[in-house]
Image (cartoon, rainbow, N blue to C red; front, side, top):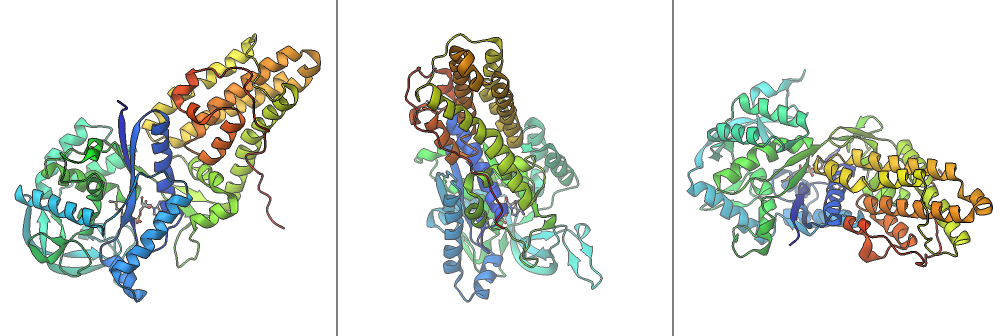
Length: 511
Ligand code: MSP
C-alpha cells in the first residue's frame, strides 16, 4: 500500500478577489503535493473558501447582494484561480456546503458534551477586519484616539453574550505537546513566538457571536452563530467526512501531515486548532508551516494603494511556469518577499531561458542532428561524466529531506547547481568539436547530458509542471516513466526522440 499524505491550504475569505498572496500559498502547497505524488505517496490535497462571518456579510451588502450569492460568485473566482494556476487539489471545500455545516455542528456538540464550552458574556476590543478580539496590551492608540491592533486594523469595544471554549484549561497540555513534537511548528521563529504567547497566559476563547447572522448556528441555540475561526478550521476534517469517521474512506488521511498557512494565521492553526481537536478527542495535525508575506515593489499590497497584483494577469503576460518559478525561487520560503516586475523578468530570462532552456536546446538539437534523433548509447564513460551524473542522481534524496522541511527555495537551488554544472560540462566537453575529432566520445557526452536532463526535469515537475512535461517528452521519457522511482531504470538506447523545440521563451519588454 502507498503511504499517504494530507496537505492543505488555508481556505480563502471570499470578501474580495484573489491576489498574488493567495496564489502563493496555493502554488507552494501544490508543489509539495505534487512532490509527494512524484515520490509515490497517495496524496489528499485540500483547498477551498471560507465564506461566513461579518466581513463577507458586509462585502456582500456593499455590493447589494445576498451573502450567499456573493460568496458563491467569489468562491468561483478562487476555484478558477486554482485551476488556472494548475493547482492539483483533490477537493475544494466551501464552508457554506451542507457537509461542512453538519460537520461543524457535530464537532461543536462533541466539544460541548465533553464540558469544554460554556455560556458567558464577552466584552473587549474587537477587530472586524481580523475577526478577533485583542487584549488591551496588544493595542496602540493613534493621535485621533483610535485603537489599533498589531495587524494595523482598527478595533472597537464590543459586548455580547457568547459561548466560550475553555482554552485556559489547555495551556499545560499544549505546552507539553509542543515540547514533545518539536517539528509541529515551522519555521522556528513562529514556534518561539507562539510559546511566549502561551506562556504569558491563555484566556478562554469566545467562540460564538450574536451580533450578526451570517454563520453556522450553534446547536441548540439559534441566537448564536459560530465564531468564524471555529467554523473555518473545521474544514480540514469536514472534507474528510467528519463525524463519519468509521464509514468515510477519506478519514485515513487524518491527521493531516501539513497545514500550510501564511504567518499571520499561524496562531489559529498552531494553538486554537490543536486545542479544539484535543477537546474533541481527535488527533492533532502533524505540522503547521507558515510562509512569509509579499510586498509589491517595496510596498504593502493594498487596494487603496492600487498595487494589488492579480495572479491571472501575471500568468497572461509571462506564462504560468515562469510565475510559479519566480514566486518560489525569489525568496527563501518562510521569509517575506518583494514582488518586482524586473526580478521576475530576470529570473525568467537568466535561469529558465538561459540556464535550463539553452542547455536542453543545445543538447537535444545535437542529438537530433548528429545521432539521427535517437537516444544515444551509454558507451564508455570518463571521470567527468561520472562526476556529473553521480551528483545529479543524488537530487531525489536531497529534495526529499528539503521538502519535508518545506525548504522549497533550497530545492530549487540544489537543482540549479546541477543545471549550472551541466552547462559547465557541455562547454568543457564541447560535443560540437568532438563531432569531428571523436564522434564516439560525442555520443557518450550527449547521452550523459540527456540522462542528467532527465533527472533535472523529473525533479522539477512539481514546480513547473507544464514546461517539464514538454521537456520530458522531448527527452523521450514516456508518461509512465516520470516518477522519482523511475530514475532508477535506464532508458534503452535507440529510442526515437521528437524534434526539439524551445521550452522557455525569453521575455522581451515591448517598446
Ligand atoms: N480565511 C482565513 C483562513 C482560514 S483557514 C482555516 C484567511 N483567509 S485569507 O484569504 O485572508 O488568506 C489566506 C492566505 O493568503 C493566507 O495564507 C495568507 O497568508 C495569504 N496571503 C494573503 N495576503 C498575502 C500576502 N500579501 N503575501 C503572502 N501571502 C498572503 O486568512
